[in-house]
Image 1: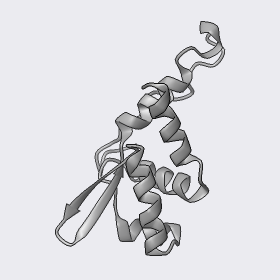
Image 2 (image 1 turned 135 degrees about the vertical axis):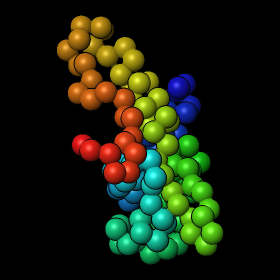
Image 3 (image 1 turned 60 degrees about the vertical axis):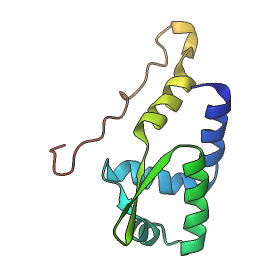
Amino acid sequence: MEMPSSLACLAALGHESRLRAFRRLVEAGPDGLPVGELRESLDLPPATLSAHLNVLRSAGLVLDQREGRVIRVRANYERMNALIAYLTENCCAGSGACDPVASPCKPRKKGASK
């Protein structure tokens, strides 16, 4: 990931409601959530959530797919992992003092054991 892309991602996540939405989608796993369910879990008006999802979508952090009358939205784990890798690329001059706490996210399939 290059600087302009990382700035777009960080700017998109720099709003409380967008960060909450993105974290909820990461939590939901690879299947994501129907937009209505995401809206209910965040308690946001439909137009507000739509605007926030557009910002996250423009940054490449979320993907959506129409399923009949329902739009399902999910976190773009590849983009999220690229942002984390960019932020930690030259961390602590290679001393190991700030090794990642977690490995890159590999979302589990629904129903997989934890």
